Structure formats: C-alpha cells, structure tokens
Amino acid sequence: MVFMIQVVPVTSRKLRKQFIEFPYELHKNDPHWIPPLRIERNEMINPKKNPFFQNAEAELFIAFKNGEPLDKARGKPVGRISVQINRLHNERYGEKTGHFGFFDSIDNPNVARALLSQAEGWLKERGMEKICGPMSFSINEEVGILVDGFDSPPFPLMPHNPPYYDKLISAEGFVKVKELLAWKYESRLEVPEAARQISEAVRGYPGLVIREMNLKKMEDEIRIVSDVFNSAWSKNWGFIPWTEAEIKKGAKDLKMVLDPKIALIAEVNGVPAAIAITIPNYHEAIRDLNGRLFPLGIFKLLYRLKRRKIKSGRVALLGIKKEFRGDVLGGLVFLLYVEMRRRGLELGYWGGELSWTLEDNEKINQGISFMGAEIYKRYRVYEKML
Image 1 (cartoon, rainbow, N blue to C red):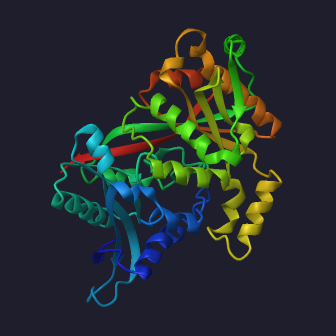
Image 2 (cartoon, rainbow, N blue to C red):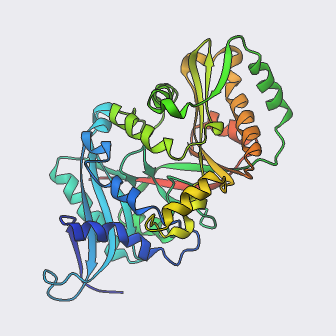
Image 3 (cartoon, one colour):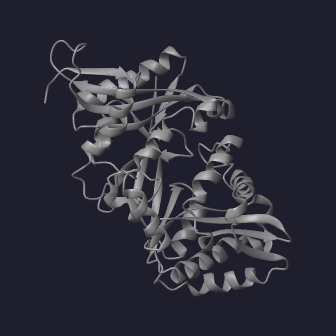
C-alpha cells in the first residue's frame, strides 16, 4: 500500500482527540483488545495531571495519509507515537537516552518508518544518543510490545497490540534490549508441599504480621509501598524510584480500584518488610464500555466493582526489602504467594496474572514457576543508537 504520509505534532484539542481515538478505531475488530477508559488516557498525556512531566519533556505525533495538498486536509490517521526524555532516567544511569511510546500503526512499513524517524530526529535535535521503547511514558507505566500471547486480553496497565508491530519496529533497525514476562496462575492449583512448609515456617517468625492496606490512609500506605519498591527493585534494569508526586497520584488512583483483601503489607515488629499488591482485573468490568464512562458506563462500573463481578487479578508488585531477605524471612515471598492464593479463592477468583518480570531475573522467575505459574505472554523493549 503506497500513499503519502504526513507526521504532525499534537498542537490542538482536535489533534489531541485524534491521538487518543486512533487505537479505538485501529483495534476495534481485535476480540482481545480492551478499550481503555478515555478519561484515563486523557490524564496520561496531560502534563498537568501526569507527574511524569515534572521531570521530563515529551511530544506527541500523529501520522496521516492523504493526497495533495497535505497541509490543507490531513485525511485519515494511520499511526501515532510519543517521544520523550526522562531526566530522572538519564541522571540515574548517566546516559543520553530518549524513549518512545504510545506506538500504534496500521500494518504499513512506511507509516512506522515515518513515525519512528520523527521520534529519532526529535531526540537527536536534543542531544540524545540512543532511543529505547516503547514506554508510555516511563518504565513505571505501560512498557513493551506484545510479541507472544495474542490469544487472550491484557490485564490492567499491560499493553496489547497486533502481531505485526514487532516486524514494523525491527525493520527500522531497532533491536531487543529486554523481554518482559507475564505469568498465568490458576488458584485451583495446589500449593507445592515444599512451598507450603516454607510459608508455615515463615509465618511463625517472631513479630511478623501480614496486614491489609488501609484505604482510609492511602497516601501513607503508598509511601510504605514506595519504600519497599525502591529497596526491592533498585537493582532491576531500568528502575526509576517513584517521585513524591507519583506517590500522591498513585494513592488517588489505586484507592478507586484496590481491594484491601489482596493488597498486603508484611511487617516485622512494626517495620514494613514486604508487599504483595494485586490489582483486581477491572478490565472485566469495562470491556463493553468502549472506553466511555458517561452517561451510563460509570453506573455499570460501580455496580460491577461493588458486587464483586471481577474474578481475576494482576499481581503487580511483590517484593521484600533487602534487609529482610536473610535467615527464615528469605522465604517470605512464598508466604505472600500462599496468602494471596487463599484470599483470591475467598473472593471467587479463578486466578490471574503475575506481571511483569524481567526475562533474566532468574531468582524471581524460578520462584513464580515453582508455585505453578506459567509464562503465557512476552513483551519486548527495543533500542537503537542514534
């Protein structure tokens, strides 16, 4: 398919709307794509509402197809992309790296080339030496391109795309820098005897208490989660600590969807030691809303959440602070697995997803596999020298 392509920056309300709306049209016939809430997408790209922009600069672009003259009538959107420079990333790793995200395109190499070239040029003008992505916008948000596991819908905050995206990106000289794994777990599976014994030994540790998060003190609780997160994940590839603004926004957002029964904090003598946070799979509640809460979608969503119509969840955060990994407490992760499974069964969950983990994080991957979970989706992150 050959046609003229024009890539333009998002500089108006109309273009902003087209940027958000494009994937709804592109993926409408994919039975496994879950239309995200438009209000949430708007917040993601709004510099006044997404704290990412406090430490970054970014630009959004849309690709249009049309005949002459392109500057008078842009025609139909055929792709989109974001390009951003995260100062926190470059300061932490001593790099000059930019990122791209929000990549969506029709199955046409010329469109992908135009979008990615635009992103590369934007970064080179600002002195960057490498481009990496997709990240929409940061590693603490949506990351990667789905490259395996297209036969089921995504869980919250995980991407979903057609199989041809990998081909389009790879054709422009991008190479894999990392793969991220998503694991499927079914609650009906019995806990392995060895894991059960370890968990029971840990449960008897003096001063150990596993408690539910207090939604009435959500900001304080998210600070605890952030403290454990910054300790447990600090050596992971691409890690960026949460900022104060991200903590506050996270408290506000998670309060609306978290079920405290599956949002746990482990403490030893009152000191936070580990976390296990499962996000109820609210995709089950919004799948038929086509991304719209108004006028009636909000009532459907609230009813489904209140009536516990959700039957699965995504274990998004599970980690132990470094100082608690020795001795018996090294098995605390198994106790948290067992506890989450038990609570999930009480809520009527069939199971869910543990995501994401790095492909080369052997220790955590072995632990998840040991509990009976299986890899069922893979996501790829790419890079290219500029």
